[in-house]
Image 1 (cartoon, rainbow, N blue to C red):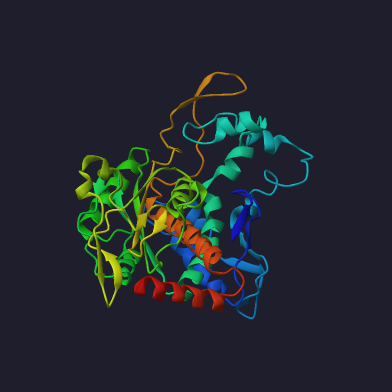
Image 2: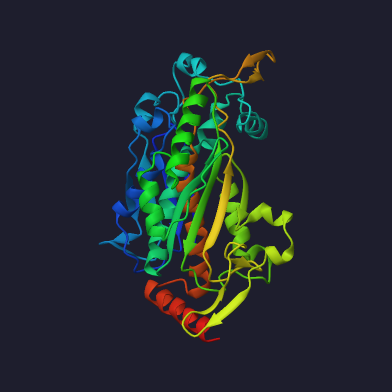
Length: 389
């Protein structure tokens, strides 16, 4: 499976075309809209989320609620487009005074503005920021929602939550099931399971906003029910944990990723890092612990996949950093685009989507590509084989 996205932040719409989704998967717009709504929530979001109410249109690849096996086209319209038709229009402007007024010549530190302008030769950096905007993650979440439908049919469960914002760490996250974790975090303004930490996180966001600043954090994605042996050790580019790591870091503003105990492993002895193998007739092979986060040798172990991503503070600040105007070469305070003081809660939904995509894509590739019923049968056979091995 693969997908491409297209569209600009203030263009008419965002589009993704998904190829390789098996035939026979039940898929409705509501499956996707639920996750689009989750992405727009979260304490610390800016005014853009009050303007947009993201809803998907399925334009191809689905008939009467079932996927056809042909490419799926998903579109999310930008409601704010009506205010940007001249600035972002396809046709040349007759009167360019409006374009000049909105021209961006002052790159913002931490954004793609300057690097992208140099790479593509744009003197107006709006050509860069419109595409490099995190608005693009809208249709990545849509693609992830399709992947989650595949995982659901295979009995694979996925959830995400926030474990840290602005240095405030969630300490009490002893959930009994993914269902409980998801139920609690969906009610939390910061998608945090720890009610005490939730209040402190919200206070930290408020403080940052008052200062005209922003804060980042850490999100965690957990996946249960993935069969043993998904991925491969035989080539670097077939290691599933590597693909997931790349997907996490590809999210706007994400700068780090870890599995299981992650970087903590560097501070422990090997006996405190690796997971002892046990076997029983009822469950087959399993591990006493899950410090490696569900992976060994680039393949799933059958234990829950646990992956965390580090999101830096959003670089668009209402107390802007200094920059240099590319036309005059004079120092200026960086330009301000509408922004959030904290987008970590929303980013956890995006992380959930990209992890779901990589796992679903790996499973479809490994267990049959064309029909959901055959994939379900093959996955069940693998689970039974691994248990009896």
